[in-house]
Image 1 (cartoon, rainbow, N blue to C red):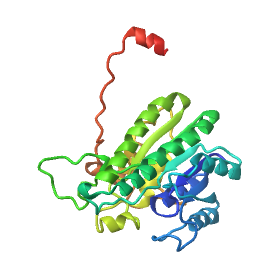
Image 2: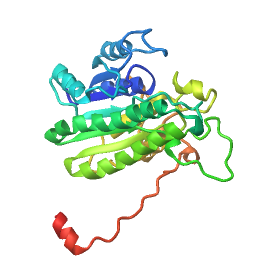
Image 3: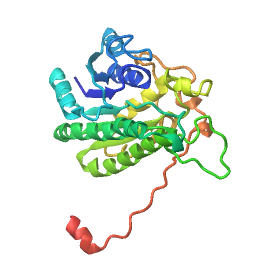
Image 4: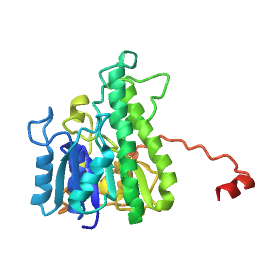
Amino acid sequence: MSHLALVTGASRGIGRAIARRLASDGMAVAAVSRTLMPGDGTLAGSLEETVALINDQGGTAKAFVADLGRPDIDRAALVADIEDAFGARVDVLVNNAAAARRYETPFAEMPRAFFYDSVETNVWNTWDLMKAVIPGMRGAGAGWIVNLSSRLAGPRVGPPYDWHPLGGAVLYGATKAAIDRITTGAAMELHDDRIAVNTLAPNRGVATGHAGKAVPGWPSEPEEAMAEAALLLCTADPAKVTGRVAFSLGLLKEFDRPVRTLDGSALVPGWQPDDIDPAGILPDHLVFSPAPPVPDSLKETRA
């Protein structure tokens, strides 16, 4: 076993695609979700199906049922159970699980319950799982954390404000913006531990069962592009590729990364780096403020 990856929201969609691609590259995968069996959830997909796909293709995966949006869940215990089951430490973490997006509820009508559910699931769950795996990564001398973000973390720019089918997407966008900021700060603090921390978002959206209902007919990219970009971030040199707020297509183009099928056996036609139009790559929405000048006396105390 070269690596042990914990992938949340792995029963369907992008989470399942990433789990499959990591497994096809030789990683053992702990697939985590609320949905164990087909029919248990409101959307198609289950952990049993994800694990079967991986194991049937020669990979190694096990299912772990957990509702990561529950405030009382012990995420450190979940990580310990996973490590006991595999006899290894988690050194790759992909935080993909997310709360309902609540696009249909405007800012002025958002109830407290929706707010707390989104913050618990999207923000604190990401933070708490990161905390739970960091000791093992430090012990191993390296680690990789990828937090799934969204283009909606970027600001709405105006006036004038163009009409948008998702409105302000205030709650979902705000939690994803928080994840971007947590990621860049954690990357700074964990750099000397050789623990890479990055966020990854689709450049054009992925028409999963969940997202496809929100914006039907929108241009999208294949799930293989996101899965390949995630694998890149889960295997790159943690001393060099960290603190990124990355979009999938731009990342693949930058690294000239071939996009393979989820089982790793073939290239995906039409989505190789040379096929990606640079004009369609999203710009970085973050503007970094330089640190203020540090007095020599303070440098000495920090040293």
